[in-house]
Image 1 (tube, one colour):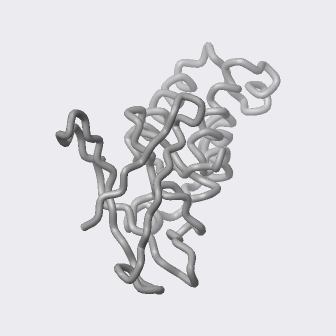
Image 2 (cartoon, rainbow, N blue to C red; image 1 turned 30 degrees about the vertical axis):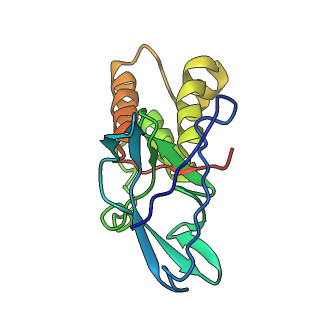
Length: 174
């Protein structure tokens, strides 16, 4: 059970970095499970909630089910739970769910689901929400009406699911 110290600074936050030397601990083709822990004043402050993260060591590269790994976050996809913990799609139940049917949804609900399916990173997903509130053209294209209470409820529920990790997000590398 190794410990890896991660660091960041004001210019790079929320991107964290650290050096992980796997050595012979994880043979090629093997898997490693880990969790993030916040330590303050040499005491454990908070454990990352949810399942352990799982990565595989394949052909000299560390990968998860979505491809190459940037420590703690997959390249091209990711998230943050609002407390500084990056979110990953957790092994198991999220990946096995079928894509939702868009039948019966209004234009905005369809746009929200489609945008979420196309944009796997938390940054892009939050950007979509920001843009529907700040760009009238994008709001029109998405069918979003800020005066429609149902649309506001969709946004609140969506953001709640993003924050809690129920909609898994991935780091986009920026």
